[in-house]
Structure formats: C-alpha cells, structure tokens
Length: 381
Image (tube, rainbow, N blue to C red; front, side):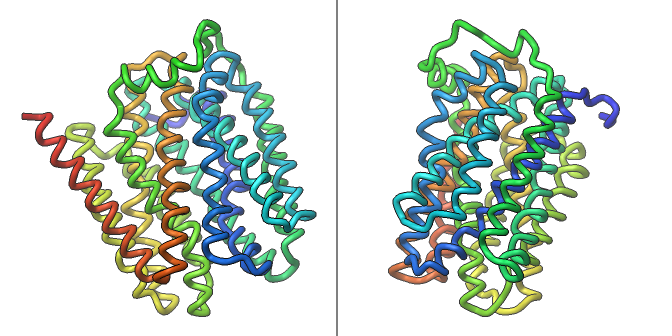
C-alpha cells in the first residue's frame, strides 16, 4: 500500500486525531498536579479512572449517535467539550469539580476517538486496514512526545496554568482540521437504536478481541497513570520514557505492521501480550536513566502493534455503518481496562506500594493471555 492511496478524509482524520491526543496525553501528568495539591495515591487513582468510567458508560449512546447522525458533527461537539474542560482546570482545585471535569473529558474522548477512528477506517479498503489503521494510530502516538514530554518542561518552567492552556490549544487545532472532513451517506444509518450497540458485539463475535484489548489497556493504564509518580519517588524524570515510547511505537506501526502476515494473527497478538506483561514486571527494578530508556523501548515494542491489529481483525468485512459501534466496543474495552484497573491498582499502591502494584499488573495480564491462548487452541480444534 502506498501513501498516495489515502484519501483526504483519512489524512484529515489522522492529523486531527493526533492533535486531539496531544491534549489527551498531556493529562497523563495530571497526577503531578494532584500530588502538588496534596491528594493521596488512592484519590489520584479515583480521579484518573473517573475519565474512563464516563467514557465507558456513554459509549453505547455516543457510538450509536456517531453512526446515526454523522462522525464529523459529533467530533466537533467533542472537541468543544475537551477545550473548555481542559481550560477549567486552571480555576478549579476541589476534588468534586475535578471529578466533574474528568467526566466531561471522558465524554469528549468517547465521542471524538470513536468518530475519527471510524472516519479513518471507512476511508480504507479491507486489504489496507491492517497497515492503514496502524499508520492512523502511529500518528496518535506522536502526540505523547508533544504532550507529556513538553508538558513536563512547561510545568517545571512556567506552572500548571500554562500547562492546561498548552493542552487545550491542540484541540483547537484539531477542531479546525475536522471542518475539512466530508461526510458520506453510507457512513450513517438513521434507523439504528442504542440497543444495536450490544447486538453488534454479539453478532460479530468479537469478545476475544475485546478481552485481549482489555488486558493491553490494563498494563497501559498502570504505566501511564503511575510511572511518573514512581519515578518521582526515585528522583527520576519521565520525559525520556515518553520520547522513547513515541519514537518506537510510531516506527513499529509504520514499518512493521505491513510486514506482519495476517495468518494466525491473533496468536501473534497473544505472544506480544505475553512479552508486554514481562516488560511491566521489571518496572520496580528501574533505578537510573538507562533503565528508563531500556524499559521505554521494551514496553513500546511489545505494546505497539496490538491495538491496531486487533482493530483490523474486528473491522475487516464489516459495513461502514457499523464502524462507529465496533470502534465504540473496542475503545470501551480499552477504557475499561485503563480506568477500572487504574482504580484497582491505585488502592494496591496505597496499601502495598508501587513495586507490588506493577508486579500484580504483570501477573494479571499474563494469566489473562494464557486463558485466551487456551481458548483459542480449543476453538481451532
């Protein structure tokens, strides 16, 4: 597949999604803001997980609205919500209001990411989805360099108000790009109801994909939400982790996804998840800058291809009017994994410390992957 084959909708959706994710990824450093305001580890876990709970609960409704009324309209609404909710952190420090803002951000994420992903997928032929969706998500990862890496510098040099303004600015740019998207008639289905979200999951038999995605997300969440605090306790900076993460994941998705054979693809994904669990197990042994860089590379290599490959498996051969709901299911499983497990791991960290928390996360992912492997072998037989 050559880059000239991408249509304008795919290009606009890809870059708009990247800019939105800069805003989103900046908030991986929100625990630093909360810690500076004397919130406990369990409070931080609750705040960070609240984002996902609103995203999860709203997805059956938002993904249906996306397929019913159009991806472009809903994405513009989501961007407005994200811009204002990001800026309001400048004026708010009360726990209840912070939770409300995280709920609004979760709603914006649910709407926008499902919309932009569906636009990108609908712009690709089935044979191009494995590489195209990997490319789409690789631009998402670039945002982690523009987001957390520079955000940490802004916080240190200027403060948190400037950090929140910086974060919101990128959603403003994304808003401008989304105006160039052209809605197509086959992307919508005016007759669908909210209940069709659940029937779509059942009829397309994608549970194993959703569970694998949940396992991936639980490891992603524990690293992204707690690694900054873990490294801070050891007088280390998280900036280099995000630099390595951005570079390795982006390059892997661009150059490796098209080379990977689609034969027995799910089993290859399970192997990646196993190595992903192993990488997380060794987080407690990080104690210098070299270890941070090494972990960043190992974590990123094992994580990079799982999400886009799972998405390509789920979407191949599906009608365009289903794309919003299928992406809604995929992203819901990811949100559940990130936020439910962040909530759970926050309490483990509070009681037993970060070392036990990271090892516990690794073991849970490994056991879940083993169960999927056993079930896959039974299905093949």
